[in-house]
Length: 126
Image (cartoon, rainbow, N blue to C red; front, side):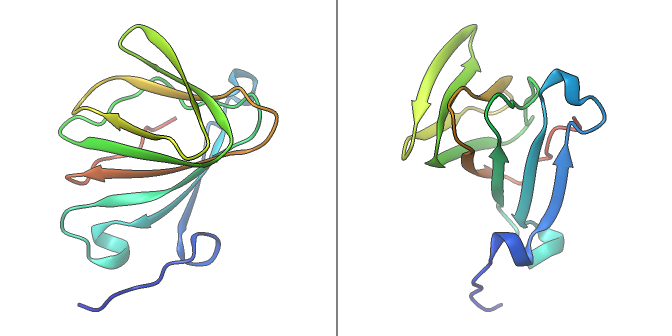
């Protein structure tokens, strides 16, 4: 196994989620970079998600996986534990195993969120 440099807009598996119901504003662009299939990772799944202003993920969880998120740029709110908590550029988030959560871009610019799951987990289906 060798060390890799991965470029999100060139090397990633591109996944556009939420396009089937754009009126719900749960549209986001996912660039999956680290998985068993893509780079032979045995522990991690990671990538970049971009939310335009007003867009959000669905309320979802990753059973069996912990999640770490890092906000590259932008701002928004994390919905979890029955609360809405604001986050901003350069914040980290820790989402415990199986906890339902949602990311929302409440700012005026694109939100760039790096996510890492371990052990490898699945992305939400919508």
